[in-house]
Image (cartoon, rainbow, N blue to C red; front, side, top):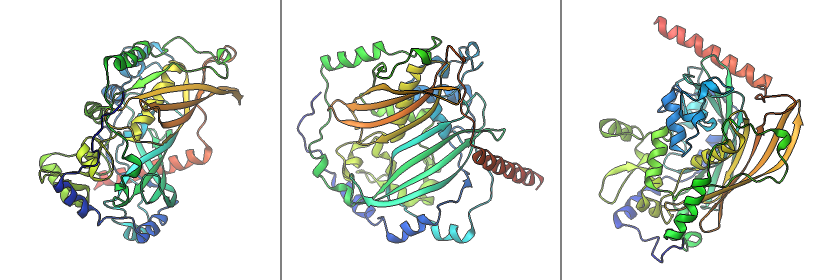
Length: 437
């Protein structure tokens, strides 16, 4: 799986010109100061994702888009025979189904001061944490409210100065019940600094022999979800290893499948033709001409290697969210239908480039009885074909017990439950008022 020697950083002249224009959009002390003003302000999300309702088709396509064919997520006919009585959704999907929610805006003076903040600055997801309280069920209409929890400035491994932002998204259903909390760690970097060639100069595209594919295919052939066979807490021991999993080699096709499953359409949007024109007029800095002089989204660095080279990487790379989904897939296959995955935390450390393959491993690092709930703690790792760890994480799973039976999700913290009830009540009030007009 060795790469061939090539000039990974040779950039088209037209792209070079467009990149120089993009340098006008840099991190500034003013924008960083503005970002601090948003801390502690939760607002209803007015965004509409590709899917606003968790239809059976939406649940199936998200799972298939991340390479998970578990019938619990993909087949309507399978779910009724499980403990859930229905098909359920991939836990990670909760953060990516959204119906616009009505609510009170942040104070006008803060909104005015933070408008247009960080436009044109490169952003990537570097990790996140999930806490789940209920499963995602068919026809759940998902609303959310969110706010910035923290912001920090530092010298980044990937670029010069960078800003680290952590935001919290709370997903609730059509009854105002909290389903889960998703904290997202985002890194904002300066494009000018990210072109430094040093640390990426030796990275070359992966190539594969038939023997390489035999190794990959052997792992795929051995993979399967545990399904209805219960994994009892009493039978799990610290040091137990999860069945290995593989993802890749990463292709543009895999990126298309992920988008088709429902990811990547907000806040800026992947749009076409006239709708794309309107979007370009709305957020011009998001569009950068390609080598043919065609306006296209800066987001294309996930599938357009020429643009990725222009901003300092040897080739296109995946979304950090994809690897979060892959960790969830790995844990879900191991845990079985009756388990409750209650928490997942991950850190995305290296890029996963087009052509790269990720090998997933994990092991049990703890088991405990917490308030009568039988919990297992897992350690997770993701290593590419270069033997470089690109991501790692932890998960907590509530397993069936021979003593107490099926596990339950944890209770929603009282303060969060009250906040969700207040936000949903305000949404309902504003919705009713809007209908009367």
